Image (cartoon, rainbow, N blue to C red; front, side, top):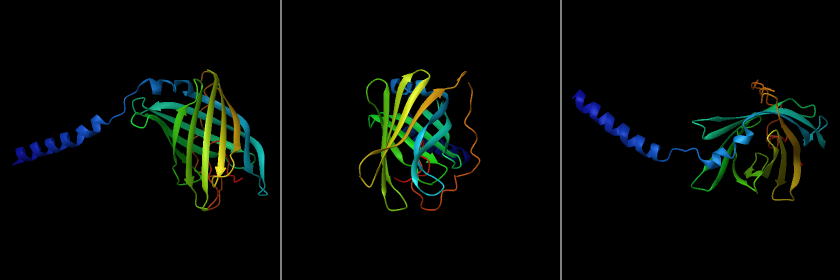
Length: 216
């Protein structure tokens, strides 16, 4: 009887493993095109945010970003820590990979200010510009659209622009920033998440990388 049970376990294990193996990710040229981002970066720019008095304004934004391959170099892990104006730091994570079936990149976002995890589509626009697009409904009943553009200017400089729409309205610039690769990739790691979500109140508008906690 133990032998029969063992045989059954093996059969079930093989049966479950086969589909997983067939659908596993394989690193290819689309992953390799993202290698430019790997390393540690210093961020500086302007972001449309809410000041302490609650008024929208373009304020200074600073932070660090880090990109590195995980899961057999098939997913690019992005970590961002940013401060917009005088608001507490925000922390973001994203996972990026190539979806062969869909024919585009997918980026799944996670942020310290919300339980939402929007999934965006990514495509190259020309040889040096990578663009991610996504939209999702927020707790305030509005639909927010995002277009995040990364322009690779050199091996050590990337320009990032974040565009936003609210309820399908006119697109506006939410953030403009320059990412400069640190020396000896200057090894400026992203600070660990300290659990501070930037004291965003319940139902606050979405917070995305390079955006602060803002509404238009």
